[in-house]
Length: 83
Image 1 (cartoon, helix red, strand yellow):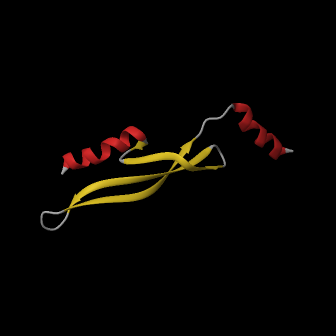
Image 2 (cartoon, rainbow, N blue to C red):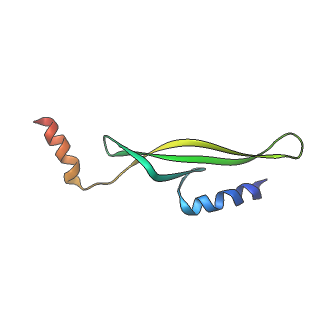
Image 3 (cartoon, rainbow, N blue to C red):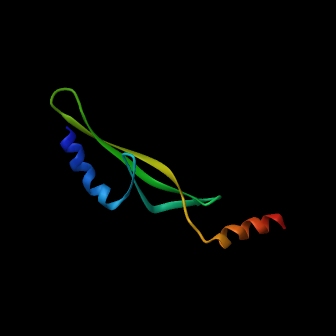
């Protein structure tokens, strides 16, 4: 069972950002305030079922990443807010 799970996770681990057991892609990401981006991702696992069958499970998930920007671009909105 573990060998199947490793096999199914190898390719996504090479192509996407991995956090824990989940894989995330910047495609379709959304920027929020405070330098935060929300990325779409998924979790997949291989589980045994009744009998000698196996099940591949995919779950969609979201993760928050902090994005880096030049210090001036962070200060401009703060200065505008104070005026």
